[in-house]
Length: 248
Image (cartoon, rainbow, N blue to C red):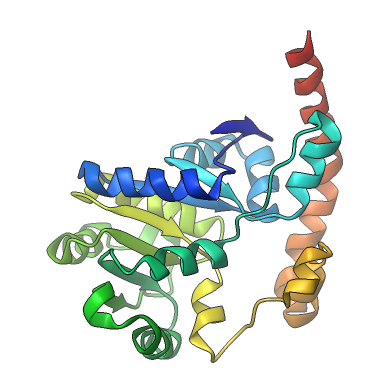
């Protein structure tokens, strides 16, 4: 694990999966953040949110641009590990009990149908629960935790969108007896087959996924993209200063 742009990243896919497995076996609850460009700028601007993100076991890098910045600033080579990919990787292991939390009833129903057909519910041990549409302060965390503790899953997937889902995980974690919570944003929609689709791989490889999502959902994504663009120069300037200090 290494800290860049004020985020504690685990860049190795294999190490991320191994650490998740260790956390599941430890019988102590923890959470993992999937840090995209939106989280990057929120962490830069909001110290309280930064402590929430870095209160996680680690963050994976769900940005194709961060590896490019690190190559330019430090000369190191790391790779993106998207929420969609870690979701697929963990499901493909077929060894964890899993709980899916968030999204609309329609999306969850379709997600359940898609996943159980592909991975077999009897193997994966899947349970799906919708969350009410409300402010992050208004969730009944005690009741949500009680339902999760009763099922005792290894992995709890959360889909609420950043920054809401990271704050949600941070507040839920102390109430859980065990398990790893992972917030994956729009991944439920991608895998449900009834809503948004992830950008084609060639778009991702060209670092244009933000543009694809902007065109797919302009009203929502325009605000996010404009905030990231405004904040990016100061983010890079600060990291370059950090790099100079480390080199001394």
